[in-house]
Length: 186
Image (cartoon, rainbow, N blue to C red):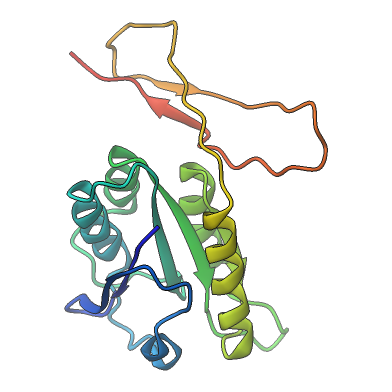
């Protein structure tokens, strides 16, 4: 799986083009939130780029503090974009640790929401070597996945949300799945 590194600052800068490398681009270690972040817009842009890619499996890896102060797109629009291209969101929470030693709860919930709803994974890290380890574990997971497809028996085109779940008979494997899907409308 190839990766693309986007920085969700005010302008939304592409830091690295798609590459087959398994390591995080070195410039990612210098990313710092400047107070005018566009997390939602960055996810929408990544989804647009992924829509034109030939790969069947698609993932968006977010390195963020989870705050969005400047996006034109809403979080629901960003989520819709990721789901529309079938992308799983892997969110690495890089929020500043507060005085109690915990990351911001609200920003963590935003990132966890993107990950949970798309079948990705949420990782909290203070940065530095832990950031490299978090990215490495995500890259490893993406390289060792199997994908299964689901064809619904309910063919109604009503635009409603439909919950899905996967149960396994083996305890030695991990399942990551979307919580459901939105039926086509019309």
